Length: 191
Image (cartoon, rainbow, N blue to C red):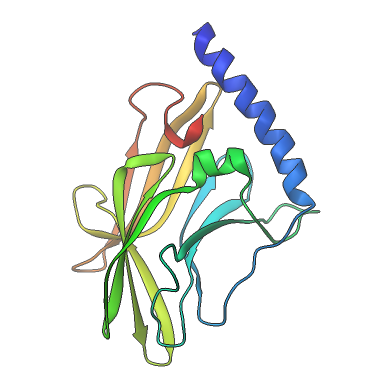
């Protein structure tokens, strides 16, 4: 137990300092065709969340080899509404890997893995619907293929207590919810 605390407390202190440093910077920029929020991660300790977006061109095609991005979407008073992830944030909420898998006139598939959830493969489908670009993330929820809406992280004294995935069944649109517990304390989302 002491070794977990020895690893967690420096991360908590570092996160607090990083959050203060991040308040001064708000250099997140969005393109005209970007989908700013595909899904998001919220936490139990405040109202802020990390949103995941995708950079797209006028034809709704991914821009570059790494079109997905993560940023803070803040709701707490006294903070800029958006801001970049710092180094510690990237270890917990960043995108560990992404690859544009297919690009076709009807859309594009991008595979991603989150730093704090590396065992899960998330597929992002990007396409044009009418006059706008849309993107949906797919991740199994409760063993069903689902469009991921958001992940909520419940923090406890020793780090992540549990994670709840929320989304909709790909086939029938039914709401899906699944709660997962980390295999051992302090493993998910960098804590």
